[in-house]
Amino acid sequence: MAVWKCAECGNVVEARCKPGKCKTCGAPKDKLAKEAAAEPSGKTAKAARTGRK
Ligand SMILES: [Zn+2]
Image (spheres, rainbow, N blue to C red):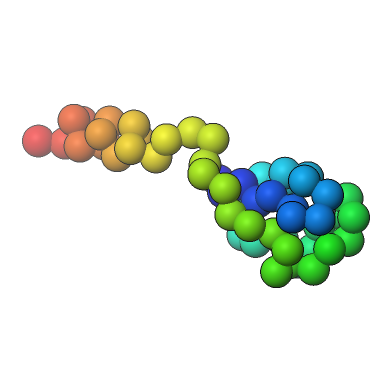
């Protein structure tokens, strides 16, 4: 899950794909910047590796 932050109003949106526009202020998608994901993806990859021999 990626996190997108609006440069216009500072609203943060969680979405797998980049939103078409900010739902709060209606800014176009080029105003939305990708932020670091809330949960680390490395943990899932490590678990999958451990379970497989
Ligand atoms: Zn906004």
